[in-house]
Length: 272
Ligand SMILES: Nc1ncnc2c1ncn2[C@@H]1O[C@H](COP(=O)(O)OP(=O)(O)OP(=O)(O)O)[C@@H](O)[C@H]1O
Ligand SMILES: [Mg+2]
Image 1 (cartoon, rainbow, N blue to C red):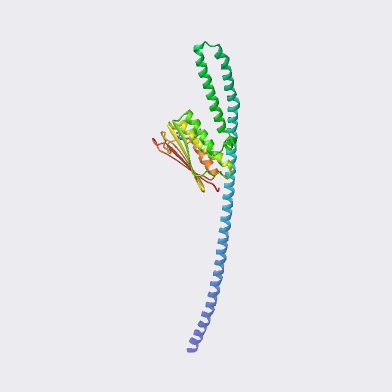
Image 2 (cartoon, protein in one colour):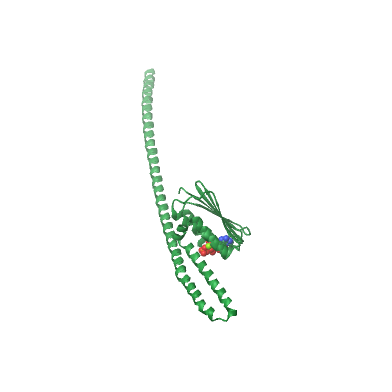
């Protein structure tokens, strides 16, 4: 009876040790499977992230190419309009002015000053058409330089529409790495000015170019009626402004509220 118990106890002892080995073996197997699984999972995630990053890079490259192509097309259209204004409208104004000469001579003396005034208006129109045609041509903008082109544009608008249109330059001017960026930045400012002319009823416009070592901060203000950004119907102007800023990796903010004019702020990094 006791032997059996001992034998039974011995057998039990033997089976516990086998069980322990089996357990260790199984734990090892499970650990290896888990390690393989984790390794596979990590590798899968790394690969998936790489693929996603590559897809994002390709998408961004495509978007940037499309935006570039769009900006180039718009530049070409503006240039064509500029040429057309210069060559066609400009020539017609010159011709009209020349034709006024003999008409003036044939007029009785008391009417001649009216014709002279008309000739002056034609000359002024010609100057304005030429100035506008220059600002539409990106090559002329590049040739004149960014700061001078803005100054010319503000002078033109002061003659045409506002009590004052002033440019303030702070710091030492730094040329942009990509000259095409100057034209893009100029076009954003031009859209701001065009909106101020069309909608603001402003009397004064101010533009500040603040040259910091790594950044150009452009701030443009009109003191007109302003608008509620949530209530207006966005045209292509405001959308293009943002698109153009993205193209040159600049930050753009437009602030306005009814009665308080409009403020545009652009932060252009020189190292982009
Ligand atoms: N300086 C401003 N003062 C008052 N309202 C403005 C000013 N700028 C823009 N707005 C308002 O914002 C709206 C959208 O301007 P946006 O430039 O996008 O379009 P648009 O000038 O009407 O058309 P587009 O620029 O395509 O010719 C304007 O219709 C106007 O109501
Ligand atoms: Mg507009």
